[in-house]
Image (cartoon, rainbow, N blue to C red; front, side):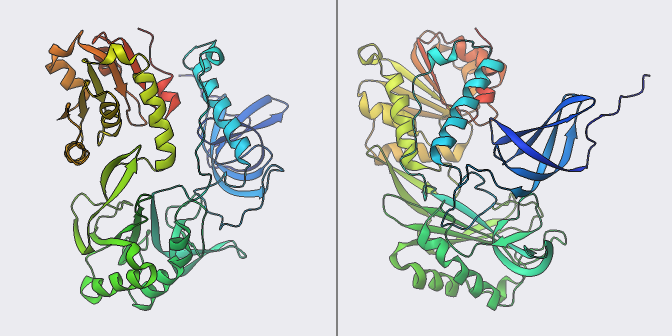
Length: 452
């Protein structure tokens, strides 16, 4: 058996310092190592062209290496000062939004050229639609408790009670969020430090990742832009629960945010996995209500803590408007026909189409039964008729319902990031619909669609 050739540029586990020169889709900065052996490409997530970074090689091949970002040693000349607290989850917040748009557009089009082999993609491109809000646009955030913090001056882990976000590149180390991050609700995030102080004063321990023990785990918050309400979910272990007064914690939230508090839920999660919702845990309502109402394009949608809903609702309105424009481009042809909404989730897109094309029948399919139940309730709340929802795997549903073949005018696809399985895609194509509108949150998987 031939001996495997050693990489002449980097080895797995190696710590390197590298200048980022370019940008690839998905937030990966591109650096290059040049020596007597030639040129070698290095990908470092969450970095920008112009930055000098410290990173660790996690995967190495003959042609390229993938790294994990440790630290930005020198900023890019493009970066601006921001009035927000810097967090690991927003590596591009200092980049002018015009530059963000350019990177996003250029890298997406390159994917369709490189993976999809669509050479004339620029000629087919319609338009770049921007978010109406550059900051404070998110409607959900998850904040982590941790017993391990980070001393930025000493550049070392320290034992301390933290509530905020994980330190970049770690799963065990947290950093306090002391003020507005620029992503979520400013009033809430400016007061998170008070919530942390209250929890710390109880004497109960935050979660210690390496030891897999502790009481406080997560604080999850949903926001309604329609009502300006906040829905909270405090996640703890069951150990020491008798020592913590959930009603007093609810009172604290009301003291801080008044009638903005829609409700407080409490989740018990004794599992070691780093998730807010445990498969074996419980979730109970402590105060108020367990859902909030959000509005999209004049329709109301009830959202629970576990519901999937677009993170940026104002941007979602623009996205869905474009989807509806494509679906109803020839409105006369779509009237009195069937539109199939696959991977429909809570049925948002289908309901919007039904509200604008009264004689059109919508068939929505999604594998998540709770999402389908929410879709039915939302359709009833919005007084929209002509919708039928099925809780089923899309591929199996199409196999079992051959009656829809040659009966569908338009198919709406909105799959998860992994995209659509080839066998399922073939079943979708075999429906012989006149039009397909594919909504993708990952153009890389969308670009891999084989040509029919």
